[in-house]
Length: 320
Length: 286
Figure 1: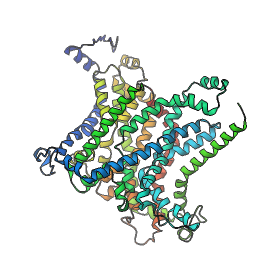
Figure 2: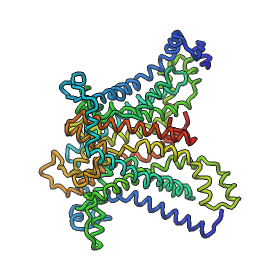
Figure 3: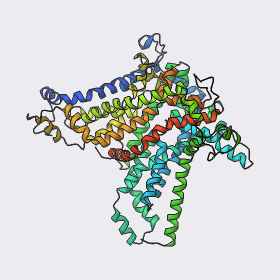
Figure 4: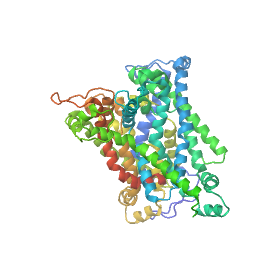
């Protein structure tokens, strides 16, 4: 592997096996690049890698007064406590159910929407629809929770007022455990469905129009064209997104759940992240909650790596 | 172009379906705006207000007379401006350096950054770090821990890889080192992408909620989203003017939601112009 032929007037040829002298040469040659990288490097070191060391308190009985160095070690006690706690099953079920609903109902929608938008003939109408459906992606969960309350609350919620005006009873949407997961899913759809079409639209735009021409001459109707040309074209994108999605099966948007949480729905609303927050930040059980968080992160990592490997097995590119 | 009945039917249905999707998307936002501009009397007497008979700024007047509200808007604005600038500098410099293929250690660095995308130690270790840095109740606790993200570094790197390495050579001949070259040549060339990422960052900073919940105990330093959430949870605004008669809580909440949303709506047209390109950037295989 030869490198730069001429740079800054110096001829620097590097070889694959660099001796120490060559390494020094390259470091010196690129010293300003390394300078550029310093702020980012410091950021990742301090705010991403140092906290990773913090997970050791999951194996201790951490006390802020004693600090990490002087807190007693308890090995896997916290994990044992966590796995035998019935709460664990609850957290797992809630997390899985929310993600499952999202996978089944939310995941296909941006694809469908992208296909529909692609079929629009009027560019103006398409632009208008796009502008509108992209917007909720930029709104904070606080705003979306606010909008949800405004629509579903029992006091002056829009939906309930409509129900009353047609003679029906008000429904306690926000306090009903049976509706909680559905409301979350609908929120996610409202917020992200539009934005999710971007990748697909880009992929569709990249397909060769001649393919459509040829298929039309063979008598293919719109839906057959979609099935045989458009969908295969975006197959790669779908796969990658599916991998990412599977890798995040343990994640539920903390803010979204936290903001919709109330006493009546606690049984269906508690997920790993809210549990960690509640026990760790609010109740000060640092070690235990860190153990829970560590468990969740490790599982997530395993899932992503596994999903990535699975994708490669199918011949698709992974995310790394 | 066939104009068979089936085809026309499909197009008609398509337009209708997409129109409904757009309306459903827009309706909650529309409704919030409408209620926020309604007069108290009308709001209390009618069940449903779809379009106010009497427009009124009561709710806004009440909210904006409150120092808490103004202050938190200021906090969020500071975050959006200063935070975005800092984030752009940190991310773009690292991304550019990593885009130069000649850099020794490039692959290792990228793997380490990728790892941070896949694994996070969790809330508590981050909290401990911020606390030990003395940043609790400091506005920089809302900026420093989120200065950059692996995703953005990778995306920006992909973009910078389109800038040929020979540019560095040319700049070097003119006596520029890479830092100067980055600042004077590469950045101006990359303005569309930088603008796109800048807008993404700005929106994220404006939407800061969870960090503030964790690190800001002082209510005077709350960004707008935390204040808004407090209002939604039925907590009265601190420092309410005792002389002013407050409009109904529901109306106040809606006006607060609008205030928290308006900057995003204003910035949105510019976002539209740039983000399509910005997202495409990521699809450039780097």
